Image (tube, rainbow, N blue to C red; front, side, top):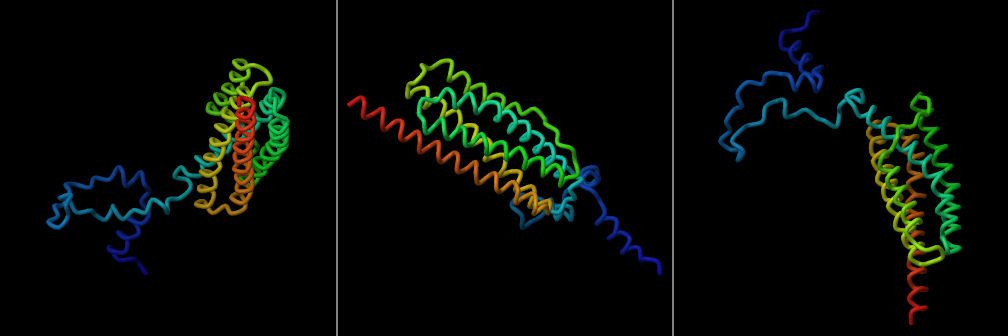
Length: 218
């Protein structure tokens, strides 16, 4: 049975993409007496952005972000041994070496994510992580070996790294949930928990270093 004209119009409206909405000639806005903005929203204001198909950009955004973080984690694998060697505090050096092993696991987890996405692991240069690791190297060059100042400088630089990663993983998890990828979300959540724990550990070590330095100055 052929569809009615009204039914055909309904189907056409439902099938419109965001690009079609943007290109559509909506004509003059309707004046509303009850709306403080002076204009009454039309039917197009009912477009639910949350229900957009992944092909509209969310999946590409997610994949690019995974590539970016994959580069960042591999960069950290190179940077953490330098931080451990430069640390005067045994606890700080141990924390860096432990986090190095964790970071290697984080790299492996991201490779699992690539596999679940049906893609070959590929890194996309992360300018943010490159800058943060260079900042840590600069701290080592500009402070004296074996001093609280160097350890505190290293910790501050490292916590910036952790905060960046916490933000990045949080965003990825949010996207994974929206894209209905629970297995990937669980994988990323495991790493996020470890990044948060590492940040808290660095904060505790910083307190110990400052407390010890304060006692020596008394």
